[in-house]
Image 1 (cartoon, rainbow, N blue to C red):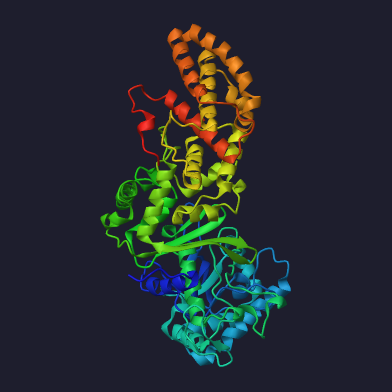
Image 2: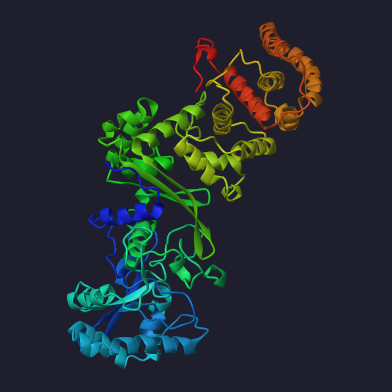
Length: 599
């Protein structure tokens, strides 16, 4: 197996060759692109209109435009007229546009579409194409009003195509017309600038002035498509090289890498290659077909073999179960359990919107063995004593962890997803902003959940080499950790004294206690004596003795009360609190926590 490619564009260029032979991906061949088709103009053999049909996929909850491979690329934005070949929107095909504010331009669009096709009628001499030309010659845009109900429904968005009554293939798929288009598109442009392609390395290649097709499917980007490689200001021009010539890429490589990326983002198999991590639309693939590639999206989305929406897919459930066992036990060296070659290259690319362009948020190239080993290290770092419930997954997805940093998904910092995923995939330190954002959320809502505590444990272990174990460590000397334990003990005593209390000391004092302990704990300790006496009256003297012994054990390791705790200290405080709270609900015959190895 070859080594991973270091350039995302080169890796995508090579991916095109792999996907082009896989019928599941339905990759466009050179000169074509995938477009959303919502209606079909059905013609009689004599060119008269038979019907305007809804061409959307209606098998789901709502009708969706069909993705068809059509001749040409996406329609470029702008005010100019740019009719396509045998497909276009309703303004070009029929001279009609719902709620038309510029009817004059719509009329010009239809005229341009008609003129383009009528000019080719004698050259092509195809009966189906002649029928289209006859229709365009006799059709009047005013006739569209007779079909207004249909046009305002399924033809208002998406594109339209032509088909003749009694035929299954669309007109643009006719062999003679497809051959004409491919000869036209593949013919070398004598005026195209030539040079060495930065992707393939081939010399004397016709270079792309604009990178086509545009990239679609990135969340938040323009629906018409955006560019990874694009220059649009005069200040970018040097030595007479404008637009994409600043980064010379051959027309063939431009088409291949962009088409392959579109297949991962919005193609028929995109569910296997695409997930959303924060604001970054993330795609991944392997250098050769692998089982890991086929289930990685489900894994990153947080699916488990027990997920209800996988109930009908026994194969995926079984594979996920095996993948989880690989993560729990052997790591990358046991990938043969999935019949995968551990040396297969693995790629991850994160893209974020930037107006009409795309930003590469992160790029990572490695092998499957390296990927699995780093994932195992990541989950080992997260591992904590875990309460039951689906909200506390053994292998939390990246989005579930990032969700702990914001009140809502939209509050997650766009600068966090990339560094975080890079840390997960490479074993690098976690971004400090991850821990600070979690601490901010804890201070805001006073909730120390399993996922939040897991993040803080992973941050402290990887970034500060703290070697914190899964559960309560009675020997840890850090004042911040002991103060967190003490706060949990004081809160539990209050709950024992006042069963069903609506707001505990955590709701009122957690933020101050975790940041400035010396200003809060003296008061809490005085209140604790009152609560302990009341709890003993309710529960018996055994509770008082055990609780006093616990508090004395915690306080015996506190030489003084810190005036201030920083990020590391507040993280330790939260973990001490979480560990002690969980210990209160651990059965007495459970194994001592300090005997468990640090993760």
